[in-house]
Length: 229
Image (tube, rainbow, N blue to C red):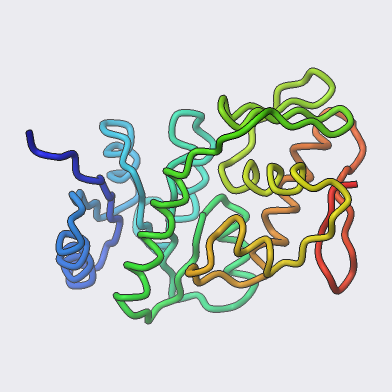
């Protein structure tokens, strides 16, 4: 029986760049489907949910930002890792891409080997199954096996990164984790992510935890990092 290949959707409107990336992804053993624009990408995602999406920011018809927003807004596709590619290198653009839900952000020009490393990291993270007993802290309950979180009997929908952040914080209530420690624990030691990425995902986690009028359980320790309680 032929083993199942990891499915990668490559969304890039520039033909030469698309072919280079396709060649390198297939050389890594991935099955690659490609789209030239955002509308085509959404159709392919609905047709066969890929394991990972590499998404160019600037595209005709529908921008990568809007495609990413729609992927993350759909309960059936929100856990698919999205790597955003962009020539925009300003900090505000990186933050905007991450706030839209992108799991990683790569600035052009980039080395193909670095991009392949990021692809492997995102796939490892998405496949890593949390194990262990259910965790509780005050009115927050987290079950790693069923991937469910609730607060004051309200079910909460967390993205995969926010879920892992909360899990780490709940394992050691009161402990202050630095941004670098959280990067190692949640993203992995070999990932190329700026520490400001942690701030973006903590802000997203806080927003969900406070959605039903509850207080903010996450404490910011200025110049150090974050703690639960």
